[in-house]
Length: 148
Image (cartoon, rainbow, N blue to C red; front, side, top):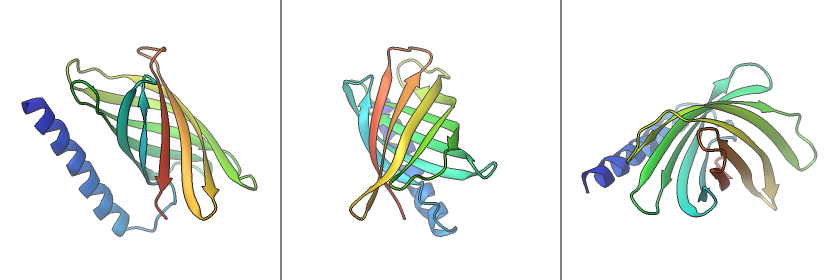
């Protein structure tokens, strides 16, 4: 029970930090909220926050994910993402990074990530896939809404 309260507190802290940080700067269109499946079978919720541009195409990104099934676990990670030139309807990206997995077995997992930012009618959305290198069979699939 104590672990659940701690994980929920971490997620609420991240949400409040995201809201206050987003209000103090111009939105990049890459911050967002997401829903997905960790290991393709465990439901999860998450946030993503643009930390800034390293170069015109290279972006630092923070992700905070809460895996909901079983004993709740949190994964907090930072990645560098190469943002390809925007096509007519999509903007693809690829990257990788490191994080911290909090829960039953704390670890520092690395990951590879790839996805697309796009718009459905007027809704700015994204879809992405993460491959967790500590367990290559653990692939996460995410669908999300980008804040404007």
